Image (cartoon, rainbow over all chains, first blue to last red; front, side, top):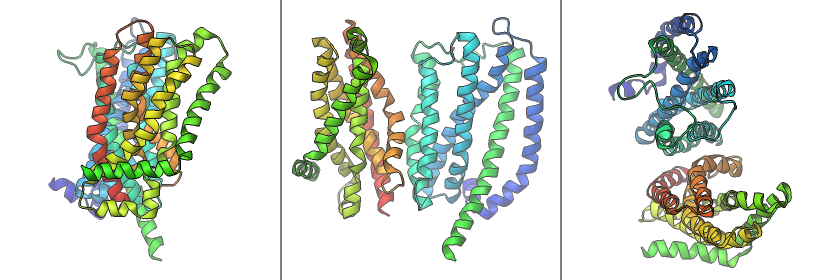
Length: 239
Length: 221
């Protein structure tokens, strides 16, 4: 909790983020380079899926990050509603479009992979539909937080929506277990260890690390922008 | 509990004095449903196949249509401020508003839907199933829609935003509602679907009043 309060002051947050950003940028470029090297060159084509298996190295981490991003929105929403944490509102505003992009990337890459593998761009099974709903929830969050003239009201309304919408996350996660779906069940995070071969697992994890770093980087940069925007708004109102 | 009943009675009396508001919603439901046979074509087996989904979607849209006024008129004339000041849980007040909304929209829709189902060529047991699922499912729509209405109170583009917020959250109810009617039509046991619908309604009942009250409090600030 001490850390949360430490970052509540926007100026202090800025000093913190400016110290972290260069290292973070470097780390995400490096991780992306390593991840892409493993994903595109080092790993062999799958014996059934052929080269299209490489789509998975973007698709799976994007899905993880889209879900984690919504979880982050819910945590930030709770921090805003419970502690009136001033930075939580700005960070939620910054993180929602990033999470929505990852959800969209997940849907699009999945669709492109589905065409050669399943013979169709889209099926209405539980995993795909719940992921689509997550994308819509992101859109609702973005629209709601920007729908008020008083931005503080939009932030709090969106925070409540984030807390309600978080119900969807377990539905996405367990949709492949609860319903008989065309989408394959979990193969990495499961009891008894991952069921996929190390030559596929290693690039997947590298890409996951790279995209996670990219996510954090984008959210930090966008939060700084939101702080600037809020300062300009306040300056406008005062003048 | 008398406060709850008083609030429901007040909302019902307001509707009773201006019955046109409800009539428009029901007329929308009928017209929107009738458009489907005109657009898709009159083949009886196709219509019977899609009837449950069409009627459920139309009921969902119709119940959303009247929701943007649920808290807005109270917000404008100051009633909401009184409810906020009253020594009485705001959660119950929000629940009372949703209950009144369900009585004037959900209930008539559930009664009306089987008659429209006849025009789609549904058999008797599917018609009963349709009415039963709507009866159990529409309270969820009123509660989720009430939450969306409370969140968008005073927002720009409130109506469209309300639909964007409420529709994704209503999808489970829609799936199990229409699914129940279809499983009944092919002779399967539909009590499982009905139980899931009831479970969804109970989850909404247990969670949305708190979220609605939180949204109304920050609207009143």
